[in-house]
Length: 374
Ligand SMILES: *Cc1c(COP(=O)(O)O)cnc(C)c1O
Image (cartoon, rainbow, N blue to C red; front, side):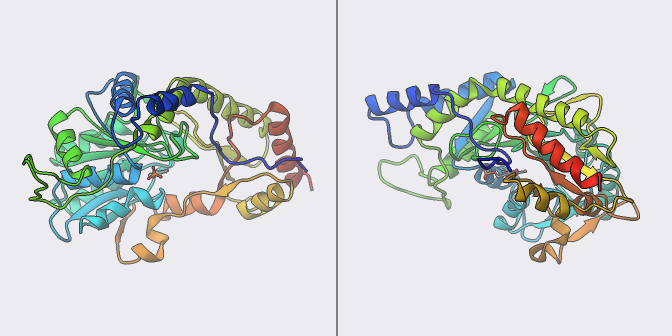
């Protein structure tokens, strides 16, 4: 058993974060806004190669603003990745829309372009599509964007898990008209909590800023013509984010090395690593495996065996169409058996903390191998 608990993915701090926070204290810019927020946005835009960014309190808030920018009518369908965390799809309900859940494909575990085409046949009026890059693996973003363009639909990219991943040489978080990233505690970089809305459309980002700061009309007194939200990121939080951004590529390289080590270490067992396409460069936020169909070991067995050794691992996100809260949502699949359901039934996430030592990872691998030697 490991002497100290090995987590799935915990924050890794470096020290620069404190310097930026100190600066906020020194200038008394503790309250919302200030230099760290503006600089964090500008630095993220430079990193991603995009024009507009709005730092907010969470990625969920960023997704909400993205959907608000689409101006949904009550009950309007929105096509959403099915195999994801609920935060990808919840904001559709905030705006009175209706999720239509799109099954995954085997190549990436992400939204299947064929299922998306099929969904447009059934709902030709659909105007908004939300795609996620699961565990840091880019979806087939070129195909998905082409399908959206052909149907005059707005693409929203949930890049919460894929910050620093690339698809066809371009960073994820830049493929949608609106894009969202997360700095939650378990993500590849963290600000302790926070997110960003990203778009090339700077006037849309301006509108989102208006909503995110209580929809204050330009008047000498507090005047409101629209409902507002308190979604802005604080200057202290942005300071942590700025310090982390300096180490983003380093974090990605560590995550990639962890994935490659698992791949090698688990070779020969009846399982596969989570897949990606040749034109993608995933950040491998979480390394995952899927057990072979005829394998008698279950994800629950692996999770329990690792748990006994003080090692955290997790089930794959339970697909949205299997969630009680979304039971009445339509689900579009092309395969006879839902790919998302199968990945959920046979897959799991392995510890991917970048502070994990090679010895610790070898131990994880040996515990997993032990389950198959019996
Ligand atoms: C973490 C996560 C979110 C939500 O991010 P928050 O910043 O915690 O709101 C959204 N989508 C996906 C896919 C996530 O993993």
